[in-house]
Length: 280
Image 1 (cartoon, rainbow, N blue to C red):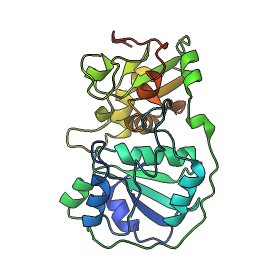
Image 2 (spheres, one colour; image 1 turned 45 degrees about the horizontal axis):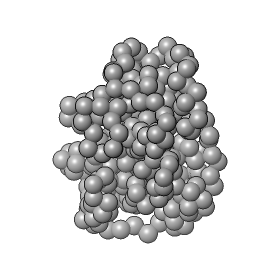
Image 3 (cartoon, helix red, strand yellow; image 1 turned 30 degrees about the vertical axis):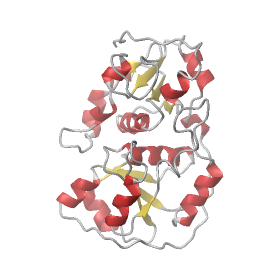
């Protein structure tokens, strides 16, 4: 089974009554950029879901920069966009899968397993000659019922416990410079959670920006196959979702997200940090 969908499949099925396309374009440093891009043009029939407004809650002292949204609110967002448990959903973005994978993971957490990600960027869609439009769809309201899957998520206390568990692996999706504490322009404290291994999130993509095949991803993540559980984190729970999707594509089932990630971890000054890289 794959959670990645080709442009050809999407173009053939995007008009189907039970299919909904979701535009998740966004930029971390410009909250308005995603919606502005959507309004200019998008895949026909696509509705827009905002990473900051719809896939995250307001940040607090703890919990990281992108806490999970209230799930009743998330259900309402989906319902207003014509999505329920029977809908086949395909998400895309133009940022290497960051927004689409965050949406995909939240849908898994919500119990909606029929959610997929386009295996390439919106720019690829345009370059390949597939249609775009300025028309904003008005889908019929549906009723999304959340059936939460708590095993998709790991909380701070569980991460602390796993530091002593040799059968669990922590995977850091950030750049190597941030992971190794060499340069971090985002967070005030640099380094990584002790014991974490570095798997840069962009490495699930080929040089042309398309997703690697399942075989390629199995090769990429093969060193993690011996662990009973893998916990994925990043700076704030966004790019870690790309690695979660990549690991699921590689056949790793026991993969969970530490949503608070590094920005949550360092909000507790008594927690240990590490800068020395760990090798598998």
